[in-house]
Image (cartoon, rainbow, N blue to C red; front, side, top):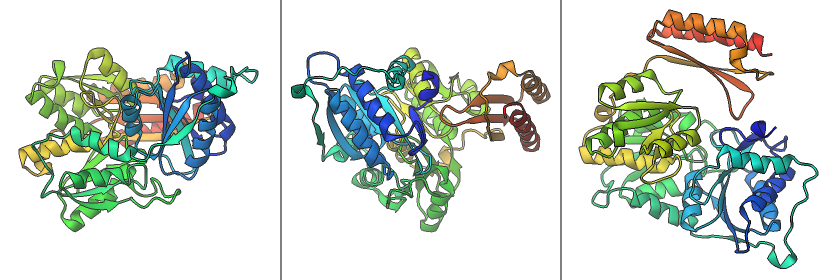
Length: 450
């Protein structure tokens, strides 16, 4: 049950539907407080959220549980996920909590944790917390009345994060003269992202900066980069930036309105870092979803691509293990380990803008480093999550498609870590065949796993 409780990025689901209910959030607060509040000294936790209407109730429930367990709670209000990671470290807190469902619609919400160093919790600790939450007979070790926690709000949290992100941009450079469109998805970055860019000197055109609790990710942000692309062309901007609801991922648009995904951005950053000898072993860490073109690009330029499971937490784990300095996902999570412990859309944008400023060339000239192979991704809703290798019909079909691709493409089937979906990805040089193979596999998976 613990494996199903936490997904690849914490707990997530539809609001007021188990497990995303306030009673579960209360127990999560208690469990996290018990796990991280051990010892006699006072313990602190930083809680942030995005702009979802349901954030208020989960914030209250988590705070109640944490305080009841004896932890002091510091609330930041709406802030990007990476800002909570940063503040947890800088405030010497024992735990960081983010209430967000990232790029999902407002009807969903989620809860994820960071440790004292700003890293997402490993599976083992998540499972310890889950066991307490799911144990109906759990006897909570409540402290005496004098040792319950207190809750406070930090008013300048956004300003602290802006100062931090600006410190990751070369002090001798500014963004003066650049016209930048930024779409904050009506989410957690709606205040801090435009302000950080303006303080560095850019002329900023704002999109998705009027949250009302229900319009987060609603036809805006990184899931709809065509909105930014249209605005870039309209105002003749130099670059467009599209963030998701919790601002831990970034999609970029060049001055022509062409959309650049995480793979293309990683290639650009890897090239720049290799040229400055800032990429140890010339290693880039990405996931199994990254395009083959990125792998080929790194190999042809003396580099190496290390693939890991989907989820920026697994990218970060591999980066720490291999002492790599750059990693990310095709979806737009970019991790610069010199500066951050998790994906950070605003920080990543500033690294792209640094390259743009240093080269003084249009982004379209700088970012055309790889031509992605045609890739088709199909999501199939499933009722059963059988190990895919134990379903003979699926294994045989995958082997047949891989044989047809003849080493110039690949097939990837995996279950979503947050939804009842099987994700089917086919990649190859012929776009028509890629689509055909993906749809055939999707039909088969739907039949076998319903």
